[in-house]
Length: 350
Ligand SMILES: [Zn+2]
Image 1 (cartoon, helix red, strand yellow):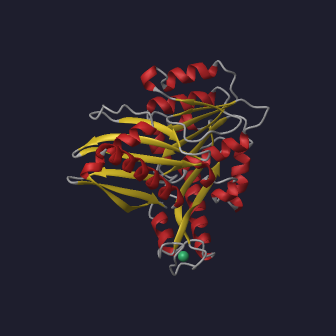
Image 2 (cartoon, protein in one colour):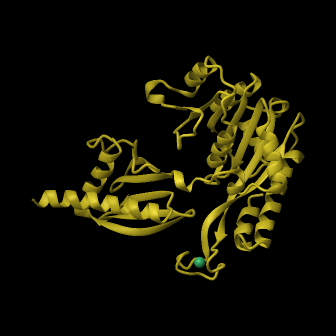
Image 3 (cartoon, protein in one colour):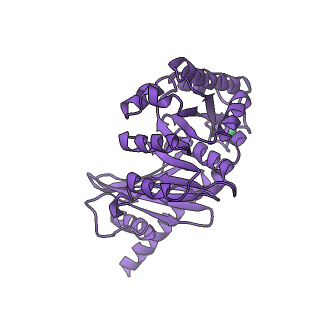
């Protein structure tokens, strides 16, 4: 009887935490075992916030419940595992477990279709950046790099571009690790090393499938960089994301993963550099109210710098993208959309 009770408590606790996270627009939920309890935190607009604590008695049951709903092996506690579950028609979750000092840490990524931006304008691409962005979408081959620091919304931008590119006349294929959202009108492939579906293996098959546009989730090493480069020079419009703090250092970054400047020239069509800034709460204009939890901010907005290329790729031309991003940032401050403080954080990267 007692066991049944704690099981149902764990079930309703997990349901409640997920419901709160969705309501609060969280991107992630962290379950962190400590010596005598487990802390639950959610990430909203990039910042973690504690929302609850689980007692030692309930801790294992909560973790078990999370594993059950995401199809993760219950008895395996010594290895990192990952799984996925659907909460409702709009929300999927991706779960990752990791053994730590006092048990297993579980992180849930919340994938909410309703919170995805729709349209380049809702991403925050405006003015001259928007004109260049549209020009990039009309390229018929070559490489488009979406660059920025971790958590700057690069994947959302890539998904937005693929959504705009998807129509009946083209075959779009994506290679992703993992797939975050379904994009209508495209063929998405999940990389799965365990079953031999590696990047090179997937790419080999993709090239036999008559693709026009190929998207590679992220280039993070020589292997993925090589695949993106090959795709671009064999006549496919190729989109990918790359981790850099700014556009000026992009050539160094690419060189370090095996793509030198000579290779970039003639292949690179465009660079989109981006970051996210906190948006000033519309209700209180930043003074703090109930809607924004007294922070003065509500949600985030992208700041962008877009540069297009035809042949020469020089550090100066790349710096243009950083300059466009800082102009975009100042413009948002002038319009009261973000604050000087937020803009300074971004400009520190350039
Ligand atoms: Zn407010």
